[in-house]
Image (cartoon, rainbow, N blue to C red; front, side, top):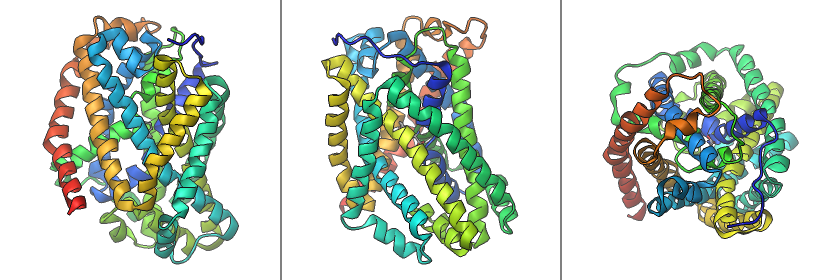
Length: 444
Ligand code: PHE
């Protein structure tokens, strides 16, 4: 065990904004938009909302309760409440964090490049060619490296001086930009067609198990659940916070940002009638469609596009630091490393892991499928079983500081029955078979 006293958040707002910072990221703008486009618009939005409320929110509160109760990072926290048998689940969390950040940083690297290039030269008229240029060859590795260096820098600064400070500045900035863009998008000629696609439910779509699985995976990914990021952030709390309240704030804000991002993206896409292109989507669709809209819109498009990409970079950075923090905190708690060396060594490892994703879009997509979907769902399943069935008194842990709240029986019931059954059905019924098929397709 380390002799370093445990760090703490300086303020309640700091903790909440850091948790929101972890949640809000590329997942809300890039992943959410392309999944929504791919899965028929409003039907997906509705399922995603349901998953966030019924599955995401209870797991979020569970992570908060375990993290604060143990005051330790995942591996040690699970051992604290459940004994050594639960350590492997903590290790799965750390592994997920490493793998997700490895490809997440590659996409973030493209984003930084898009933002800087747009500031210097505007958007290229041939967006598809430009995307090909940004994602092939050796340069994506360099931008990935650059983004990882930023992430390592913030995490090295620690909880108060690094993560909290960055979140307090960056998150309000992101909210203002995204809200401003949504207001602007409402004035565009294609806006109503975009809204119709985004908000009018097609009830036939909603029944597909694949859409359901994507919605569940996205709820976990977007709320940073199933890999201990929220658990780790809560481990730096001191005790009197109202965790149920804060879970609702974090989940609500995360959903709101994704929703508003959709109010930006869909009108923009429909201005040029590009919905067909995005419909048969891959990870790259948004990086082609949106810039081509920005380029076609002239000066205003350039300004809007720059703001859009700046918001993406901001969201990506505050999420990436939480991904790295899980591994760093684990190394500090379990093997007694210093924060700085842990951030550097683990950050360098992640950078190397991300190189294959930087060199190949197919590898990147596969890593997202495996770590971003399978691992997070598996981690969330494990955590709900742990808190629902193994922990002696999870309600006491969640309730400290929230004595007036009455819906803990509901929370426990969701964690014991609804979450494990829904997540297991999706994981074993859809996500794992889909992933095996994707791996086979990749190999052959
Ligand atoms: N929630 C982040 C996003 O939406 C990604 C993330 C996933 C961060 C898992 C931490 C853990 O972009």
